[in-house]
Image 1 (tube, rainbow, N blue to C red):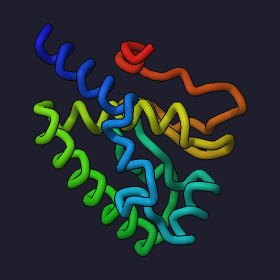
Image 2 (cartoon, rainbow, N blue to C red; image 1 turned 45 degrees about the vertical axis):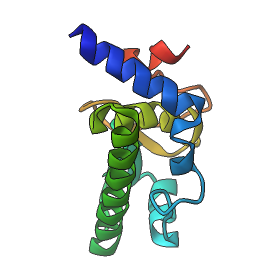
Image 3 (cartoon, rainbow, N blue to C red; image 1 turned 120 degrees about the vertical axis):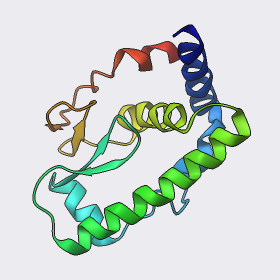
Image 4 (cartoon, helix red, strand yellow; image 1 turned 60 degrees about the horizontal axis):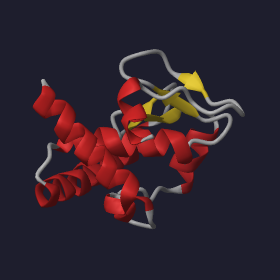
Length: 136
């Protein structure tokens, strides 16, 4: 258990220190069409604490397919970074999820923590999972 916590803390530290910075640039892992951007704005697609997009409401087959394609690209980016840093893919994805929820989700957009219910971001900061607090 301590090893997992250590690895996650290391992955989170790397992500917040810029180790995942590539993922948050104009990288294809975060590129999206107008359809997905619109679905995010209306709350039918949202960010999740696991570092992936999810379907939060009703979305057409084209949006669902693009969300799946984006998530495949994200997983590839997480896998690459995990291999370079010697941590798990899940740790990199979760660390990126923490950073995404804290800095990329805008008011009115949907987000989900763990397997909980989808929520809409308000003007207040998102209450992040406890494992995100290790970055502070």
